[in-house]
Each structure stands twice: as structure tokens, then as C-alpha cells.
Image (cartoon, rainbow, N blue to C red; front, side, top):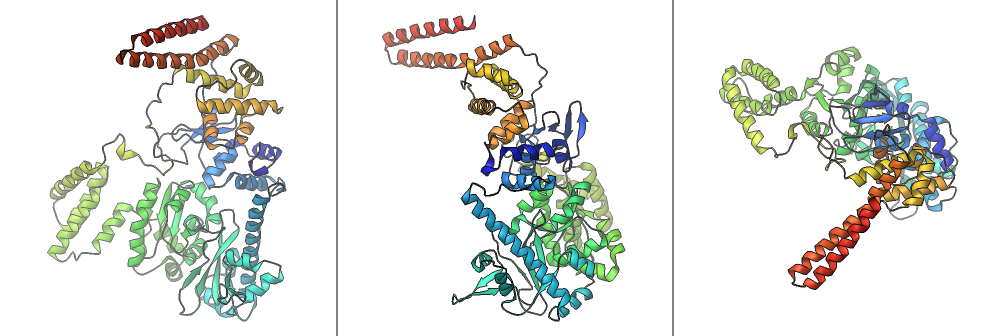
Length: 613
């Protein structure tokens, strides 16, 4: 069994090179609890750690959202990779030769080759544009413009900034000479087909070029900024098989290391803001791709950070964008703060005018809370020197403060408001309490409403109370499978005595996979077995079973008891079905049929009792 023809030996080698604690530890702070490691789950919001890593078994499992598996599965979930992508990337990191892609799967190899060819073309294009910026007369105006904006040669190289010349076919001729298929380049967003069908043109012309990278650091698209007054000011690559702007964040590939380390991200609006702020020391800054932040962006950030600082432009449009972005990030479980820039300034302009040191000290290191930002935003819409303006601002501010859950926070901001508008604290408190009561009435009535959120993955997640008691036969099946996963001899015995006659569908499927796994000559290896399943639901079920306390006693007698408990379930179900048939017969007046069914029930009960003795 293998995913997309990836040899099992490769999967096994990848799992051996990537220890589960090291892999998870890059994203989650883990602390030792006996033989387990525990931390806060990166896949859903929680205050008490339910995310558990078992070094001995090389698996992880979250009791809160049910996600579990091996180190490859963790990388799939945390980075949004497909299984083949995760294996390839982890293999490359471990120095394992990536030689299997497309070896036996023609359809898969064609798609894989197309992506690789497009990435190669984008990488070459970035190098070409970078060279033309720095080494040609065509690129000189663009180079002078960048330097006038305070962009250094070092930053130009680090961010691979380039220049697309005004000629119609510079890139077309360059890539055609290197044997790239022009039709494929058009699909990849680098070329535009001529209207008369006679050939292709460069998509980008006379623009400063900013490469856009994938999370792995491969160039997959471009943003081009015009030097003159032509529109649009910024032109992005179209969406392609490589580039999906709703799931890509500019500079994520460089910022994710520090982001994971300090669990904080800084959000900017533009590419230049990210580049200039990097020079100021903000090495965890990202920007969305010329569009508003999406839920997908927020989910990606939540996997790598706990806090987000929004540093958008200080103009009206930028501040309005902050208001839209705040709830997206909060719903994803991030603590949000806002870095306030002077009115009309963007980060790039502030750094140019005031220097890197002041930008870090005054802006990035001293963000305001979301409540403070909302109050400042509301304040600018009212004239506080006028009585009506002061009154209206007070009412709007009280409504903002009333949404805070903490009474201490509410009083803190109400005191500030009282001093600001010269209205008694008691009056503001009364109004605030009325707002708060109204908000409580509007909330859906459900348990833990105030402290819960879902990221789409856990809409039906069970409450974090005690797990439900399982029927005895389900416990027996899980105990048997837990032992079978770690002992081939037990699996062989169960195969002979029970086969696939498990009552839970997933358990029967796992047993069948296990029999096949051992039949192929494999030794017990839970991480490798999970990798062979190719089924997300079964992977989670296996991880859940393996997280059971395996210190329970187990011997031949207990094995027999478990099997008896499992095989009697169909008999019980048959008896219950017969009883329902007997009741229906009695209700219909067919007493002869009812008596016949009663005899069958007695026979079944005697047989079941004999099996139990």
C-alpha cells in the first residue's frame, strides 16, 4: 500500500528521519507529562492542553477535535499539504532523494511535471527580471525609484525585486529559447495570448516586479508595480494551478520561522510595507495579495501564531480595512492588536520619514487593543467640542465597551471615557449595563457560548465535558485493536477466531488492514501502519485507539472474554429484532405468529447463554 505510488520504503524513511516530537515541536510548545508530551492544539482554540504526543508510538492525537496520526499527517494538517506534497517536502529536508514522482502513474506524473515546469519558469523569470533591474539601462529608472524609496541593494536581492522592460516579448523570447511551451506559460500566467491567435505577449511590461513565493519558498506568481501613472498601479498574476491569492500571504516563507518562535505575526497591506519593515527588524511580517484578508489566510496564521498585530495604512481606507480584518482574526482564535500610524501615513512612509528605530519603538512595540482602536475610530466621526457630538460619541463608545466580557475591562474603559467626555462614571455604567443585558439576550443559548469558537473543522465538536461511556463491546473492540496494533501474534489469533466480525464499521476496516499489513511480512510499527491506511477517518480512529492507556492487563483469558463480548452483539440485535416482530404480530392479532416468534427468541437466548458460559 502506498500513496500515489510513493514507495513504502520512502514513507518509512521519512517517518524515521522526522521524529514526531521534533516535527510537532516546531509549531507547538510541548511539555512532558509522564510518557506523553502535551500542548495546546494548533488546529482549534483551547485554554487547557488536550493535544498529546506519544514519542514511543510516534503519533499525535487531540482529544478536543479528534485529529491524530503520524508526523507526515501532522505536516499535512498544519501546512495544508497533500500527502504526496508532505512526503516530498519532508524527504527533501531529510536529504532523501526524490526520485519516485511519476515513475508509475502517468496521470499524476503529467500534473506533477506541469507544476514543476511552471515553477522552474517562474524561478527563471524572477532571476531575469532581477538581472534586468540591476544591470541594464532599461532597468535604471526603476532602480533609482527603489533607492529613492529607501530600498537597499541587499533588500532588492533578498526579495528578488526585478524589472519587466516595456518591450512586448522579452520574456516570451527568453522562455521559448529555453524550450518552455508557450501555451503552458500562458496557463501559468506569464504570457497573454494575442487576440488574433498569432502568438503570445509578456503579461508584465514596464513594471517593478515583486516575486510571490509559496510557503516552501518557490516563486509561483508576480506582482508588478507601474512606474508611471498607468492603471492598475499593481498588477498581480492571475490565479493558476500554482497561485491562489486567497491562500497565499506575501513573505510567509521568510517570516514563518520567527512567527512560530514568538507566536506573533504582523499584518501589512502592501509589499513595500513588508520589505521596508523587514529592514526595521520586523521579520514576522506578511501581506495579503492585493485583496482583503480571507478566512483561509486567518486559518493559516492561526496555525503559526497566537497573536496578530495589524499595521495597515493610517488613512481612512486603511483603518476601515482594520475593522473588517479584526473579526476574521478573532474568529480564527488569534489575539488581535492594532499598530497605529499617523493619519495618512503607511508603514513605508513612516520608516522613510522617522527611521527604523522609531517605527519599531513607537508603532510595532506599542500596539493598542482592539477596543481602544474601535474607540479611536469612533471618536474621529464626532466633534467632541460640540454637545451633540460628545453625546453621540459617548453612546457609541458605551456600545463598544459593553461587548467586553470582563467587568474589569469594561470599568477600565468607562473610566477613560468618563474623563474624555466629562460624563459621570455612574451614568456611563448604567448605560453600559443596559447594552450588556441586551447583548446577552441576543446570544444563542448554548453551553460555554462565551468561550467557544470553531474554525470550520470542528462545527460538530463535542463539548469538552467527560467523554460518553462506550458500550462494553466497543471497549472490547478498541482494546483488542490496541493490542493487535502492537502485537502481530495477537492479531493472528484474533484473525482466526473473529476475522472481520467487529461490530463497529471502522474497527472492522482497521482489522482488515492490520491482517493485510502483517501478511506482507511487516513487523508492528504503528506510525508506518497509519501511513498505509490512505483514509483520513481510519487514521484518526487508529490514533484515538492508540491513545488508550495501554497499561491494562492482557492475557489469553481476557482476549477470549473480549471476543465473546464482540460476537454476542449480533445475537442480542437479532433477539431485539425478534421482540419487535413479536410485538407487531400481537398488535395485528396474529397470536400464532407471535407464539412462534416467542419460541425463536427463547431458543436464541438459550444459545447465547450457552456461548457465554
